[in-house]
Amino acid sequence: MSRDLAIAVLDAARARGEMIATAESCTGGMVAAALTDIPGSSAVVERGFVTYTNAAKTEMLGVAETILAAHGAVSQEVARAMANGALERSHAGLAVSITGIAGPGGSEFKPEGRVCFGLTQTGHDCLSETVEFGALGRDAVRAAARDHALRLLHAALIA
Image (cartoon, rainbow, N blue to C red; front, side):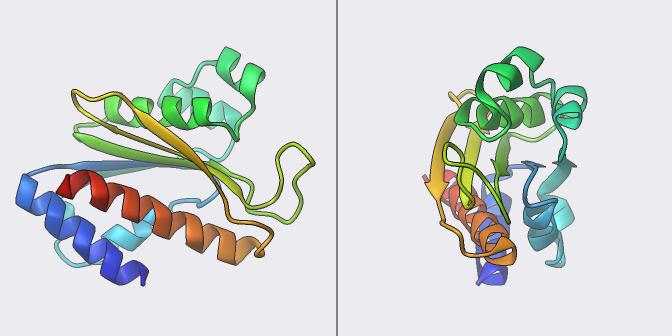
């Protein structure tokens, strides 16, 4: 499924002349990998940031330590800051971000399977959302998050 989604994203981006950046935490680069697995992706994939730690989010994407302290890494606020940071620190016009708890583990307040997404485009406000995938297991949560991010990119490109 992710290959078909990735092809659709790349085709839509190519048709619009749009470059894409990714900012990933819990998926560790899976969105960027899904896109770059497709020949010709270099025409639209500008760069990907893997920011697994809070320090990486701050250093690479400019996520404010105050936002991390107030909301935690798994939050829509951080997802928005990650997406905005990826857009600002790249030559892309569209950026998606992912931060979540793939598992195992989690807490009562931030359960396993909670993933926050950010999506921003040049000239538009950053959108964010949280999806509760549930305790599907680490691999399944990460794959579901990757596919959701690809769907977000595709929807933005065909809007």
